Length: 444
Image (cartoon, one colour):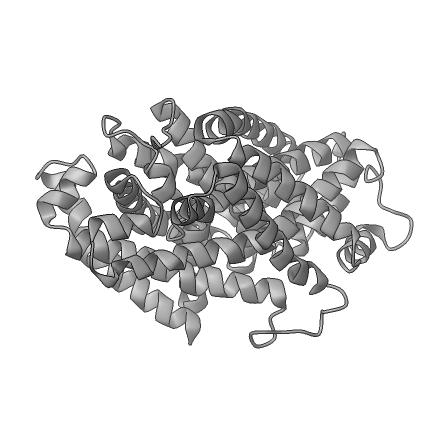
């Protein structure tokens, strides 16, 4: 069977942007930045994106394009008879963990979108306000699972429709629409009295925050999570890219657009937060409790809320597609399954794993697998702090140390020039050292 390919280079770039731009840029970025000093965190995040993220993104995509296989098959093909293929399991395992909890949070977003469409959330619920509504919803046994199942069904349908007809077509619609929605919301947020304090928080670094070691771990983890690095999503997407499509421009474009979406999300959220005197370090509830209460107080806030949760749901779906594609591509090759069979089975397993995540806010709230972390936070910790960095480290070591220099430069369409040598030096020396240092810090 001939391997599927992207219809155009733009289609690949939009799909890769869709993989990178998701809940990590909106839901996760907002509360992690809020908890880590705003501007100082943003600065570190940008440094990691350009110093580590884009060079590693190039390396990851180049492995897939060169091998034309999935995250495990690529290592088996390029390094036959070696244990390198075992590192591909970091990607498969992290995909199962991430989409299991990702679908739960995305289900929350669909629930909010539905209630803004029906008008129920144009004003705070009479009993308990938005905090009561959110807490009452996520602690239920069955209702959150319905929305999670709906989200997974949408994701599975797009993935089993194929690379060109499903994934590429969906992202050609999702990405421009998401950009327009966020730009419109940023304009609304900036029009509020007191919004400039939010911009100051986001763009004027509090340098004292850099004395906290945790901010470096959080910033690198956010760069990995946001760009979908180390999981094999971009490697898998790269395997559908023909050899005549050049990589450097695409990688830089993906990194820039990912950064754009993260910054615009901050401009949407923090000016509104400060305009209504809300603590920016509110944590994960910032999106689901704080923002709806802000929307209620804004002119046309009901419309703003509807647009925001529509954008959040689109972002979640575009990323979920790429996460599901990682194990789907692997099982298609391993068991010779059809795309439909593989995506349905893998998606169903992820949904059932997510049941424990959802119940972890209700009847299983007393279960804390890692320290005091609940089930969702424990899965997030394992994926973001362990599996993704190890996956990224293995990719850097593979390209930097297993490939010869000429092979590595050719794989990413660089010549033996200044730019090529800088990239190769970063991948071979700097990236592994930085990832190892911060990985050790994150697990101590």
